[in-house]
Length: 92
Image (cartoon, rainbow, N blue to C red; front, side, top):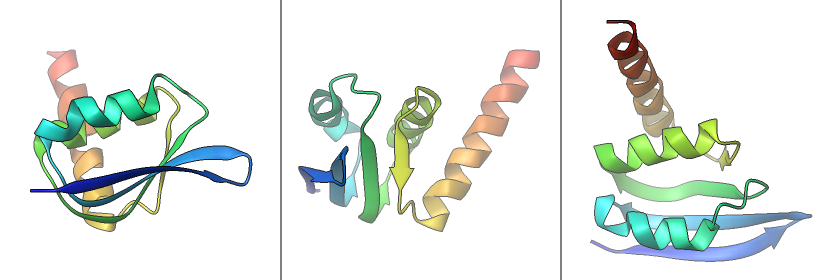
């Protein structure tokens, strides 16, 4: 499984464009690329496959203020479901 991670500047905002299959083994490489830069955006337009670990990471990054650009509907739906699931676990 391969992923391409490319950092660019779109306007005045640094953007990390991702393409390919983004799975948990790529987590560290992605984190190194964004390096706690809260003004960064992730462009997910060309992501073809993700797993639960990446969904949870994207959910966390979004909560920390990192914008998810061109997020495919299936990824957005999965993030929404994980947020609901995590919220229901916290209530118990």
